Amino acid sequence: MSSSRRICIVDYGQGNLGSIRNMLARVRARCEVTSDADDIGRATHLILPGVGSFDRGMQAIADRGLREVLDRKALVERIPVLGICLGAQLMTQGSEEGTLAGLGWFRAETKRFAFEPPLPKLPTPNIGWRHVRAARPGTLVVGLEDECQFYFVHSYFMATDNTDFVALQSDYGHEFAAGLQWHNLFSAQFHPEKSHRFGIQFFKNFLNV
Image (cartoon, rainbow, N blue to C red; front, side):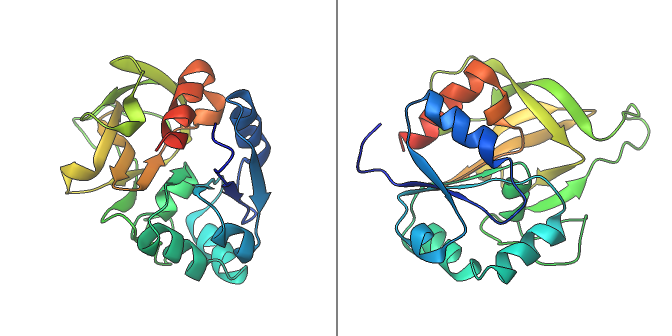
């Protein structure tokens, strides 16, 4: 990986930070875990992780004074930004899990799995390895098979009426967006840091943007 890259994993107290850092080390990418706005402001690539609840995540970003710098990096400077799991959901406009507004970088909403007849009743959260397929050609899917597998742990999913945003799809009772992409913005509902060789390729794709 280029030495000119400055990869920051945003620490807002809700993420799987060590696992992501370890996976980046496997692809020989140096990174820093930080909650410092100045450090984030110097980043060339940002990763927004997340494990936890939507409102708690958005409140933590506000409490740490990170909203302004995150918006600037994502929407003005347009550096590559990747949201993972809760981090992906925070990039939407809001969630059925909470009441706070999301970052709103994608015109999408985060919805809870609800399996009404005739859909099969499945347990939530959706936990385990699921097939993921490309919805369209794009940066995220380079070098990945038509139906690769990633590891999921989630009760909520990203929903959008704009199919141009949908990069990856999976199924759990019904089809849902497993990853969104729009220009410099990327999101993954699954955990690439727990997805072995598929996750390694996924991170390589993101870092090569």
